[in-house]
Length: 305
Image (cartoon, rainbow, N blue to C red; front, side):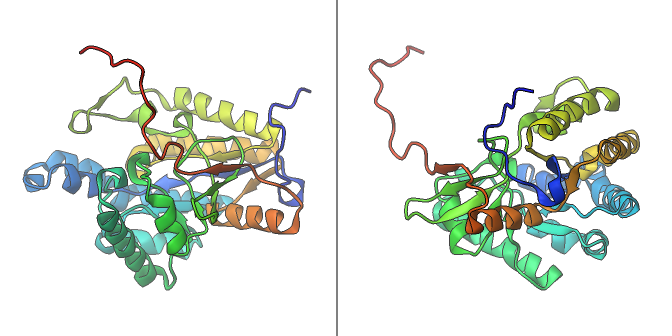
């Protein structure tokens, strides 16, 4: 068969692909970020978002325990401090807690100093809850800034899971030559465009059935399995933790396990595996250097408005 990935990494125990159902556990951080002045009045929105902490995270942790897999949740620092019981349910299952900002701030809307302050506050929240600093980061809203990579490297992160530049793990390199493992995903693996219809966040696409959403997610999995890629979902507890959608996730896990040759792992474990392959020379990851465009590209003409 024609291989569409020219340089797939060797996965542990001869697995065909790596899989992580990674979640962004945002809870009401979005509410307080976008509606700071009147968040107390938005009871319905708050109720929907806190469903993730109260109902969905324990449900997801129970599903993962049932199937004997350990996965990753990225959690804003404010959510860690506000919902310790949900975080404890994840820690009891051996799941990874990754960094996802403090209040889901968009880094590319912040100054370098403010981005650093948010990063450090989130690190401390994770350290207090888990006893160790995080190794992985996912940028809120994918808003990776020109300073993000350097800040992650300076603060000891092993990997990032914000970008989408390949079908396999790769390395992102800063101006000084330092590198970080990038674990890519894509919008097709995000549950937001499938399920979210919330006028408060400016998203009003038709809500898909779980069967239709899983058709999209399963197609990406089948391709990763066939060609040796990584399948790293970007899901949200308050979205995919809802009853019918959680049941569909169960079916997808069972489909993956029945197919065989799947390495279920935390993103930290995947990053460590990539580091080990690169260090031993067993596999050479692709490399991209950031930022892509350090200076504006000159335009010959300017469009009229």
